[in-house]
Length: 234
Length: 259
Image (cartoon, rainbow over all chains, first blue to last red; front, side, top):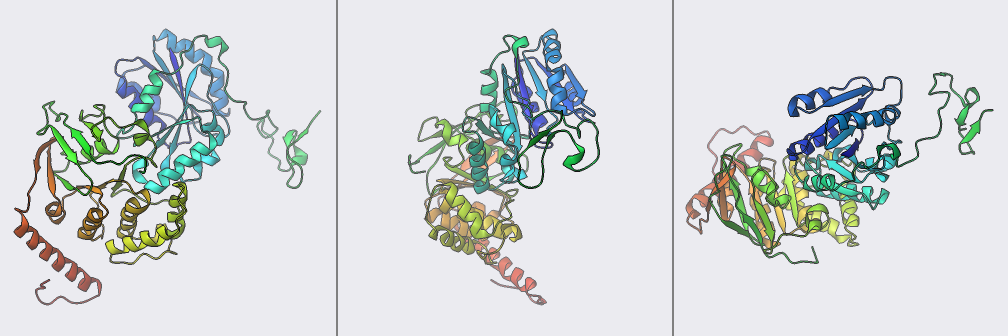
């Protein structure tokens, strides 16, 4: 079985890309897991359209990428039980700091060309550890912007493969499909680890403290002037 | 495109929506050619230029294959927009950057690794031949009209992208002088494919690809046989342009207008 992890900000076309992947590979068996915060219907849509096993997890008060990391191992077991050739995990796409990609998997980041030429820089961690960057809605922007967008992605990671598409039409996706079929296989699910290091520690904000100002918090703190991050605690 | 000179793009035929073969074997496109693609809505016009844009390799719904200089093109032609020999401009193409015209063009020039500042002037100058409303360098891209934007995109494709093939998808109603666009693309020795419903554009082209049910049914080469209709359409077009200007200037049109 192969694991595909799809990340990217909300509304960039992650699900549209996934639809095209499933549509382009009619011979393969897919299982799909959606991780979201409050509402997601993609699992029902894909199950209805392609008749594939799907699941969703609502992270609720938990960070969605954290939730994804927690359930990933169970999800692999579930997909194996369903005899899937590919498990596609779609992230909520909320955090631009985390990278949900793991070893023994193909990491795909989906970016929208209409989100502005500086958007790749703002989600650098999500791009840096991805294997493939799929740029959607390229039909809507000028040639100049396409070229600059591509350079910005290359500036973050010269390794990442870039695929440009109009995901609704499915143009240009043959390179993505090739990368998927040639992607890594899950050989030992127990040894899968995150590719990147997650952001530092749980802080007092995460656990529900509402006061503002570093004096009221513990963990990694920061002052406005001078110092970088400091650790405050026992 | 400095590394390879493109002298021929070949379209190898695919199938229509019923799976029947198309009405041609090969279509050759050479620099300086102007080709219009006509047919009813939904007949597959945009799919044809999409095939060319992505250099289809029997892997799209149409099953067509596109060759460059008689060969399957190298992958970077398709994947790197700066190396791609095709520029496509559609009615949806927008500029999202909130930059001035000169900053926008400079951004594109720099991303290509050029250092020629005169290119900005040349591009604006060429764009202004295509549009009735002059584009100024200091205006923000987002404030340009639809016609000005498309004029600038075409000029940018000709001079900065400098791609040998330009694909235009139904941009005719967007306030650009299409006859001048066609003339400029010929002058700069570009191959132009125009998806169009516009009679004048169709008659101005050297060849006409006729689409039906997802497939090419005919390729017409008028070879001058449409001259009288073309002359008439040019007169109509001039008359339309004239009356449009009068209406925009706030005039009351009380008698028939002749061009």
